[in-house]
Image (tube, rainbow, N blue to C red; front, side, top):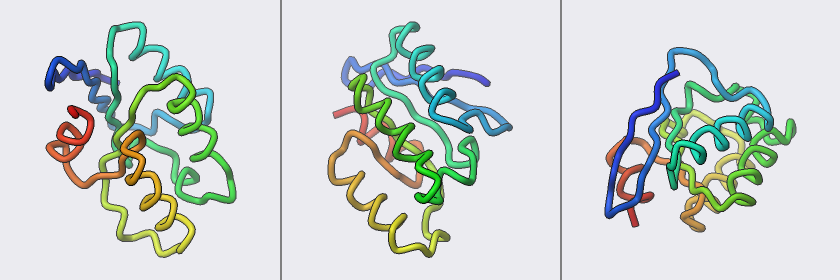
Length: 119
């Protein structure tokens, strides 16, 4: 896992990169959040490929548990990926509603993530 630092409008954003799944549980999300916060980051970017596939099955409650941690600690999150492949109405609604809050963002590109988190 590597953390790439971005500074947008004086907001320090951590871009987390890895070739492996790094978040499999709410505890993994909390550990990542704590690590980024400890290093002085205000906001976090992760990639869809670094999340367990179960994240996108809302019945597992993994997504809700992980995103609740970010909300509780007031650390905004952007998840970069291609979300059109998910056919479930519930996940589509979840993504839509999350994007409305601007605290949890599902975006297609790093540029979109930095733009959303940099405001």
